[in-house]
Length: 321
Image 1 (cartoon, rainbow, N blue to C red):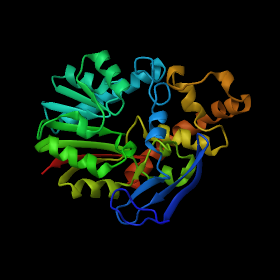
Image 2: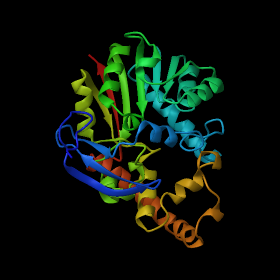
Image 3: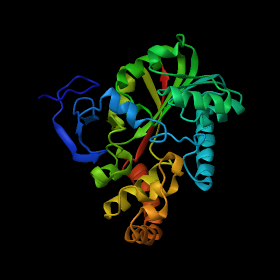
Image 4: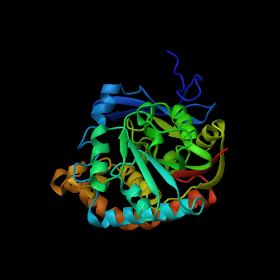
């Protein structure tokens, strides 16, 4: 049976990663040579996706906080840095965050004088974010949002587009609701990064089957240009995502239980675990390797993004023309 790309409708044959077992099912990652975007196959059904994103599985039930206080501090700092990057392009205005999660970024922007809105694909998550910060957060697909044409000065989609079943339709909606000259900011993991090539199925940011699409820089740039966006800036390094992507990938490649370190950092209400949930040998190996891996991974992150131009993540800034 032919496999058809959900983005450009071409036949896809190149398999990047095969036999990834998650939740008792096996998935492959294919890559489309036409649009330079990968796909998780088979695509989970709507019922499977609903179960995957159920409360306590992918989102936290503890007020949206997913990590320990030390990590949460750096997440807050990262949101502030993102706000400052956006304000280099647009000083103030109306902002929509697609896939706003707990609403932390929207809260940060509102304190800086922005008028903000958010959307989430889960009604439960939308209610939680709206209740936490008193922000207008809507749920469902773009057809349910009810936003008018050219309503926003900025639309952000940070590590969300890879979860979307139909990325091209999402780009159409972004173009419709953005003002002419408005700014679109899209961040995704980079399937063509050095860490992805090295890790393959062990790559931390692969995250199958949650990630339905897998973007290269060429693929994401092409998708935006096809929808009349002009790219004005590309960031290939993100301190929040890139070094940790290397750390957890190398630990996964070392034969340790998958994502053990990440699970230790998370709160138990968002899937985190106790030390007693893991093998003692895996814990000893993890904490024995961390002093070696941490500085190495920072260097690898800088090298892949600055020298190879193949950073573990991509963040594109594009203007609606």
